[in-house]
Structure formats: C-alpha cells, structure tokens
Amino acid sequence: MGRSQDDVRRHNLSVLLSAVHRDGPLTRAQLTGALGLSRSTVGDLVGGLADAGLVHEGRPRAAAGRGVGRPSLVVTPRERAATVLALYLDVHWLRAAVVGLGGAVLERGTVQVPLEAPPGRVAALAGDLAARLVPDAADRARLVGAGVAVPGTVRAGAGVVGLAPNLGWVEQPVGEQVAGELEARLGRRLAVAVGNDADLGVLAECRRGAARDTADVVYLCGTWGLGGGVVSGGHRLTGSRGFAGEVGHIGVDPEGRPCHCGSRGCWEAETSAAAWAAPLDVDPDAPDVAERLLERLDRGGVAARRTRERVSRSFARGLASVVNVLDPHVVLVGAGLWRDLWPVVEDDVLPWVERLVLPALRGHVDVRLAGLGADSTLVGAAELALAPLLDDPLALAPA
Image (cartoon, rainbow, N blue to C red; front, side):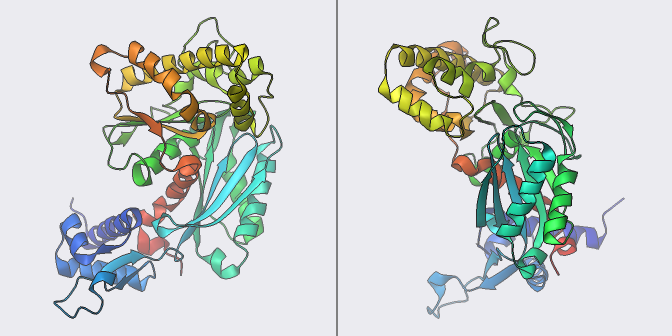
C-alpha cells in the first residue's frame, strides 16, 4: 500500500530539517540537489518549516549587494527555536548542556556527584542543573526533550539501565526518574531518552566529529571502565538486546586483575584508572585521576616505566582484537582517561598493535583522538533527544 501525500511530505520535511541540522546553512539549490526534489517542492517544504519557526532564509553574504543574477536563498536552522537538555553522567560528574537545532551548545553546567550515588539522587541533581540552565519560562517552552548518556548497558527504548557497575546500578528506570525530576523543576513533562555513553559518542562523532561520512568506526571512552560504540557499514552495531559494543570485556590476560563482570583480565580491568593508579600510588577514585597520573608519569622512575609498558601493552592487545574483528576505518579515543593519556603513550601502544593485528591490516590502523573531545557523549545525548523532532518536525515543533 502506497504512502499518502501527508506521509510523503512529512518524510521530506524530516529529511530537509535533518540536512540543515547536520550540515548547517544550505542554499535552496543545494537542498534541491541533495534531496532530489523540484525547486517548487523544496520551496514549499522550507516555507512550512519557516512558518513553524524552525528555519529562516536569507541571501548569502557573499552575494549581498552584488545585484547580479538572483542568488539562491540560504536556509539556516533557528538554533533557539527548539532545544533539548543533554546530560552525561560519569562516576564523579554530571555534565549538562542545552543544545539547539544545528548542534549549537547554548548553555553548560557541571555538578559533582557523590560516589555511587543512587539514581534518584542523580535525577534530582539533573533537575537542579536543568532549572539553573533554563530559568525562563519562554526558554523552557522551547525544550522538546532530554537525552541522558550513562556508562552502562541500556535496555533499548526503555530508558532502563540494566547494569552500570562503576555506578553501582542494576535495573534502574533512569529515564522515568529523570523525567519526574525535570517535570518537578521545569513545570512540564519532557520525553527522556537514555543511551550508553559510547554508543552516543560514536553517533556524535559520525555526525559532527572526526568520523563524518565514515562508514566503519569504533569509538572508545571511559575512565573507570572502557566502553565501545561501533558503526559498521554505516549502521550502528546494537546486538539483539542493544548491548553490543561492550569491548571492555575482551580478555587480554586470563591471570589478570578481577573485573566487575566476574571475569579476570578484561581489557577495561587491565587499562582503567585502577590499573594505572595502584602501582603508582595514586588514588584511582580521584575525580582528577588523569591529571595525577600524567604528573606521575612525567616524573619517571622504575615504577612509572614498568606500569607504562605493562598497561600500554594490555591496551594494545585489546585494540588489536577490536581491529582484527571489526576492521574499522578509524578508532577514536574519546571521553575519559585515555583521551588524556593517548598523546603520551601513543608511541608505546601502536607498535604493539602493528605486531598483533592481521598482516593484511598492518600499516592501516588509524587511531586518533575524537574530534569533539570530551563533548562527544554530551553531543550524542543531544542528538538522541532531538531525533523525534527531526523525524516529524511539524508535529513536535514548539508552539
């Protein structure tokens, strides 16, 4: 059965708004070519989005005042027309941002979280942050949703965190708890989407960071754990229950350190903050553990050299396994401990990776820092929250 004209128009509106959200200002001519639609159809779609307040049009700056020909109008997303609240929870910190159409970060805030705080306490902190970042009623009316990134497994579509070992959470309805606190503090009910931090990191990097237009990507993040987000053949790898990408539990040393999962020698257990900190007499639970480790490594000494060699080799084993199994175009080192350590230990890790990967892959391992830095997961949470608006712009646009 064919789609109705309303369905077709809804789809085209979604594609057009998604294009300017992802790529920024585009001319009508560019949109006509990209969407494969007639100029009149694109004009009608742009008019509908402009009437809803989601985009605006103007003459291109370079053409202003020329008076030669008729330049194509530029369509630009109105960044404050529709916004979302993005939240990223790590062991010690809750980071928040108000993000608008086009990916513009409009406001930021951070609050320290007590170690192993229960989900209700974190949800209350999220409500406090939201009230601080969006104090005006008019700005609150423009919010269309919220996204939460957490370092744990998330049941697909349910907003339930199945297991977040470094937070001490098991089967927690985080989405519902955050939604309740936001409603209490903002005076309105928002849809709250929850995702794994690494999955959202790779989403952000593919749309706005170092992996734009890249079909095969692995994104790594974490300080007290190690998670992976995987895009293969242009599609995010999810698995049957949404738990795919738990690369931190690749075994790299069967006699190694105990892991939260119950095994020994997992990649994350052998390379996380605790693996570095214990032999260097650094507190592994310190919020600034990365800075402390860098200072200790910079001082040198036998313990620093041996720890660096051992952990770098363990990281190389896990990285080589990821490359051998997934054959990514690029591996991105994202938010967390290894983002800070990578520039220091890259030359220790990569020679071992080259030895351990399949011969056909040698010389082709591209490991680099994530383009969005520590913001990858936060931007990914925003993209998750904006998805319903982009799917059906006129239905969800703020009044």
